[in-house]
Image (cartoon, rainbow over all chains, first blue to last red; front, side, top):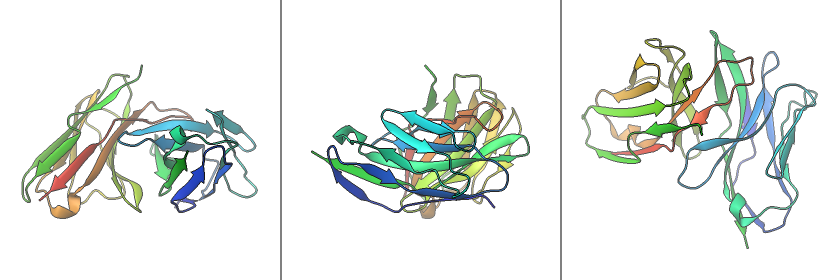
Length: 114
Length: 114
């Protein structure tokens, strides 16, 4: 079945450091790919998404490019802030019976220190 | 603003109790989902529903049931709570699309079963 593998955390960075969180997927067909973020004490919210190969999703300084040849969707940010401390989830859409589910990775906890 | 609300942020129950977790969305979404989130395991889908009175099992339905009598409300029921059901429960909703759908999450209910 479809699956998502993302790098295990936790990841600890200093403010203004470069961030990469790796995500690879296994899927039949051409799923859409997502990054969700969960800030402390909150539910998940969509950070960015890409719906086809070579698409780049971007939001709040974060970017990820849908790479079909490497089945990857790595999350990057050039300069992280303390406020980016959160848990990040990579996900793909998994269509089943007319209702699309999301398959999530296990999450990567990011802590940014001042 | 889109909104998914869950009836409780924190809940403490005793083993064997019947537990109801309620979720309400105000976006007129067809699809609704229940997940549980556990450290190191990420999000796992319990049940989902793509229409009123319709339900589908997710990856870990054992020990749970659901009810969807109205479009905006999706309830998760623990018939006889057990300690291994201590977890964070997240509700989400979405509108069917073509692989581009975004799931909107509630803030979560942290359930402790003693």
